[in-house]
Image (cartoon, rainbow, N blue to C red; front, side):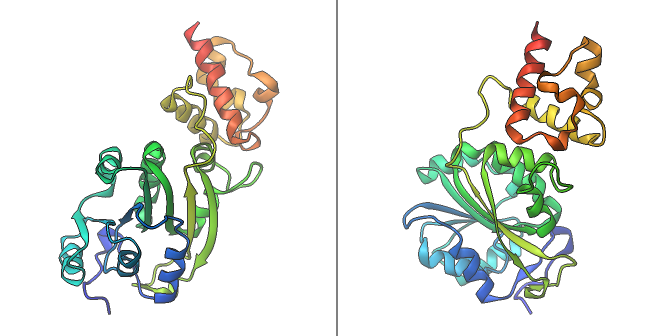
Length: 263
């Protein structure tokens, strides 16, 4: 039994297996002395091992009980009671003196908001090693023309280099979740972000509109732009479905639509 009782409304499933913890930490490629931030440490399955390697690490935890427990267990730990969805990553990176390495076991119910928050602040991050539901992790690395390929695939692959590392059994958590987990690494030091003349908010609108009606051709799913302005999409894309286009094509598509709207 963990030292604190998991709260269902916080999505707490505490990791209990030291071997899995060591494997997750080994996936983080942060050199000694780099700024490491742990999201949702809970009862500290990763924290003690991380602290031994990165004494200046910061842990962000929303549960006051877990914060108190970690402070008692690791007096030298910089642990802060904070909602990860409200973290100012730019300010934290500035405080720590450089891009951050992020690691954590994400609550299943807020995985997507956390993920998109990290993508939005990618310029302040170097790498993230995250545990999440395996089904979600598979979507992040999915390729075109597969059922897993969708909005998370496109946006993640545009802004980072995702790599699915390994699965994690539901049997190494308390309480035991209903799903299998997986650990994924996001590298933010790879390809540059999409063309800066494409507004990221507009790009997301285009991607979401395209996949929200994924069985339709792009001419129909993007009808708010194509039909109202009588536009034909370039490269014959109007006859294709969203799942057929690789991530970079959506940047070109958004740029095309934005230029026509501005005319």
